[in-house]
Length: 288
Image 1 (cartoon, rainbow, N blue to C red):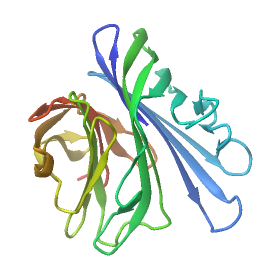
Image 2: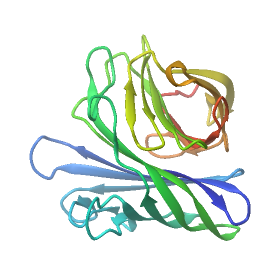
Image 3: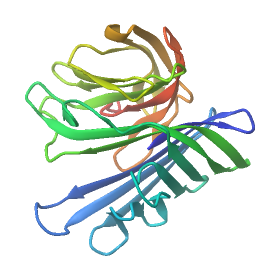
């Protein structure tokens, strides 16, 4: 889950909460869990990581009532009936930051690709993938400078697969965009010998249109040296089918996740044919 938030102090903030589960064999409860959390401000980026193994209650997910947790980090439903993802409470504590956020959905779940079956390569690698991109968020950030009351927009992704990426793929650039018009766009580029792209146009009423490989393009405009890597922090994104030609800029170029598997993830601003805010995740950029 990612969120772009405005503080009562007038600043813009980004928040990330992610829970990974990996099964070590097809049967039984032999699993490893990894949690990542981040808080991005215009000047600082705070990162946290938690690790756990399955079967001992340290991390897990329950469907009824819905809850996902690792140690004291949690994503828990506040709804008693209906779609239990419609109302969530989110908590995480890092070394120098923490947050408690309430999220309320004002739109439907969105299923990417073919009713949730999302192709990732020309060879047929795929995942199941859906989003809840319509959260209104409010809550509290605890930062070194003090507590800040915040409100804004949140976006949840749920994705699972039994397949790795294709052999020639080495990373991805993933974008979630929330336009001021109420429309939204999810798009990604899987980088490899030949790039593979996919996108979903999400109208303000929640109607989703899946776009095939090649319909969406993402062109780096500027790179910056971050954590020993040349990372693109300014992009031009195009989706001609829906008149999208925008430039995105990182709120804080130094939103580097110093986790056991390092990557970049942070909030972005959108200008051009559409305006708004969103989130960007970039993986597979080696240090040089």
